[in-house]
Length: 158
Image 1 (cartoon, one colour):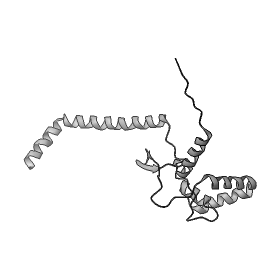
Image 2 (cartoon, rainbow, N blue to C red):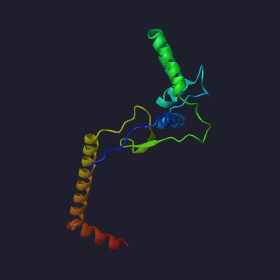
Image 3 (tube, rainbow, N blue to C red):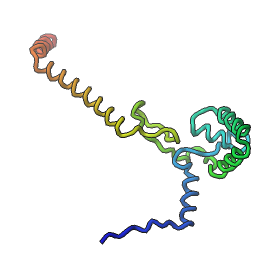
Image 4 (tube, rainbow, N blue to C red):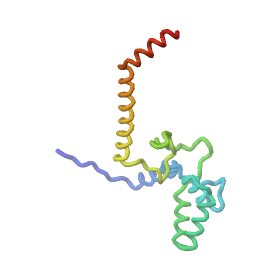
């Protein structure tokens, strides 16, 4: 007998989850930067998140205020509420993801998504093809007469 799971979430639990995610920076290191703030630290925090200079975000916010005045005002207030203050040093839990192209772990932010499965599979195929090519060249060298000759010369030099 198939039973469906009850996916109902208590509203109080949902609010608790939101506050916990907010405190954790939504898993993307998204905090208001109170050290480099001009008004509430929203632009400086977004600049930290997107890894740009704060003046760039402030210029974008100013342009938003010029073109979308009321909408941008409410968006700024919403970001002020939604973003928690950056905790003191050593208490931030930054989440990392491995970057295939740079071969290193990088902090996760909103625009750094994993590549799609097709791209990852083609990259894996290219790497495996390169490994097969190198292995076949090694095998052909090890089974050749040249290898035997090189081995005999190395015995003479020792």
